[in-house]
Length: 325
Image (cartoon, rainbow, N blue to C red; front, side, top):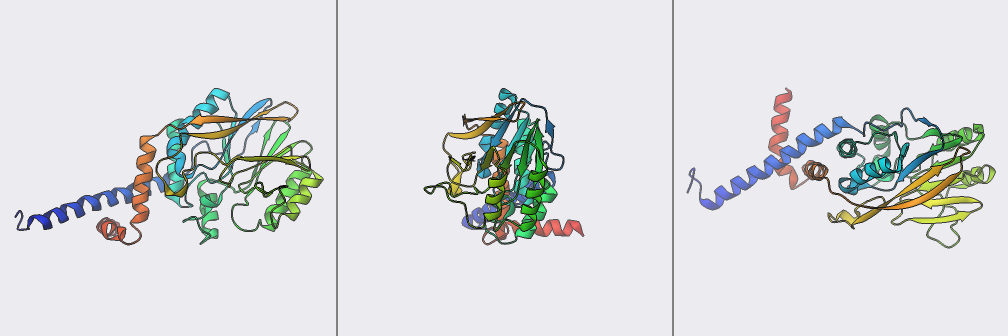
């Protein structure tokens, strides 16, 4: 016996204490990351105007893979001399502030310096990967990342990012898109998370509820439509428009910790006239232990909001509440 406790009880007390400290560390780190926000290079609030010829790197779905993706992506942006990095959504794994902070910390550690534009994906907006509180997810994205729609110029080429992440595309979104494209005299590229066509079906038919977008594409075809969301990359030319699904950006599906060794980015060379030439690059993952630790601690924070993790997180929460008084 020690401290008046039988050995099994003492072991249980020590184990509980150590676990409670880990959950406390998770709550502390989640709070820090929630304040940190998106990568410093994020440019949704002030999209750039880039002289052409130029190079743009498009990043697919990342989510949990950010611990192995941020460094190699920044390396390829530097090696390619790219002027702009564009995310097609699902950059974060959950639409909550600490998860956005994980992404921000990862890309800042990696030294991302070029402007970074992000369209929202369903995981960027939904707290648990389900459409539970979309208004809150959208408001958080706008506060942390910036506007959910944007335009940027690369020479004569107009890049247009829109939000089609969850549910039907809003009429206001389509009204804005029609105005922006109608006012532009030159080539343009559409960037959104969900493919407007059903890319894995024969004939790639338009998705449900995409009639207005189809009419706009028919009236003023983009030179390229980039999306993500699917489980694998895909490509098709339909009605004179090149549709590219750029999904294999490093996501680790199914909650697994181990991931396949590689992922892909899409590199676009933009000429002075606005013509676009595409290349896919296969990249090797490289683990960031600091980002992996952030993910582990934020997972503890998330688990501490429900049983049985709530039992271990309770002491730190009670102490925090006491200190706030």
